[in-house]
Image (tube, rainbow over all chains, first blue to last red):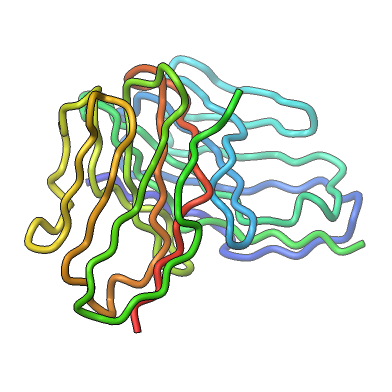
Length: 113
Length: 113
C-alpha cells in the first residue's frame, strides 16, 4: 500500500516569505500526483497535477516539482499572502490501480499579516 | 461551469438512524469517488465508480454503507444504521477520465450523537 507523508504538519510564516511544502511517498511507481488546498470546513480545491513523466508544474505563485526516483514532491509558494492560509494536501495515484488517490495528512499553513 | 455539488452540507443524526448523502458530479465526468475524511487526516477512498459501475469498493464497510450511481450521473451514499464513529466529512469527487485531474465537492459534515 502506498504511504504518503507530508512534512511539516503545520507551518507559520510571515507574509511575503517564500515557502516549501514537502510530500514523500513509498511506492515510486506512480501515475500522477496532485496537490490540493483545503480551507476549514470546505472541500478540496485542485492546485496542480503532475504526470509521472513531468518534473514540475507551475500556476501563478505555485510551483510543484516531482522526483519519482526519490519518492518526493514539493510545493513551492512564492511571496506568501494571508489568503494562502489553508491545509495543503498531496495525493498520489499509482500505476495500475485504476485511479485511486492516496492522500497525505496535509500541512496546515498560516501566513501572518 | 458548475463544480461538484453535494448535499446536505451538514447533517446531525442520532446513532442507529439512517442517513443519505447526495452528489452531482461535473457534467461529462465518468469517474466518481466517495471519500471519508476524519478530522486532521487525509481523505480515504470509500468507493469509486466508472460510469454506473462500482469498480473499487474494497474499503466500503458493506454491513452498513451502500452506494449507487444511477444512470452514471448522480450518486447517493447511505449509512444504515449510523454509529458514533461515522462522524466525519464525506467528500464526493469526479474526474473526466481515468487518471485525469479530480475535482471535489464541498463535502457533507456528518455528526452522529
